[in-house]
Length: 135
Image 1 (tube, one colour):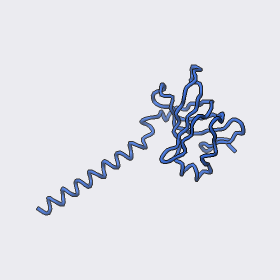
Image 2 (image 1 turned 135 degrees about the vertical axis):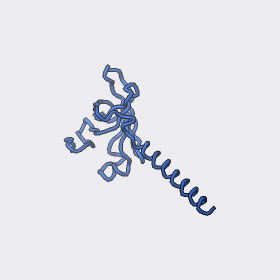
Image 3 (image 1 turned 90 degrees about the vertical axis):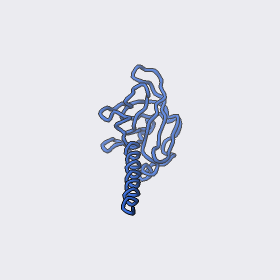
Image 4 (image 1 turned 180 degrees about the horizontal axis):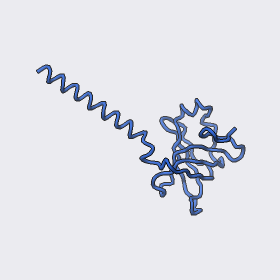
């Protein structure tokens, strides 16, 4: 009986770990939400900034490929990681004109992307992937 009880407890523990691991993997599966093979660039006005963990985000009003103004939801890195890279919640301000490059949502009608770089037009200050020419 003790062996069956130990097996049951071990099975439940392993099942719990599997579910936890699966949830964590699903949360970080960017390829499920974004087309990692494509890049889009938008130029517009920063209207919202959420500097937080686990993911920061910005909202930018910018035209889509047809020239129609859209509200773009852009997922960014976590605040802790961005702070380690020298950014603060004050690095960008509401109203800043920016250029954002990122990987688009798999559904183009969503007007969402995963940020790869952002640059403020007024002074060329920015954040982005290595190789980008930012001050």
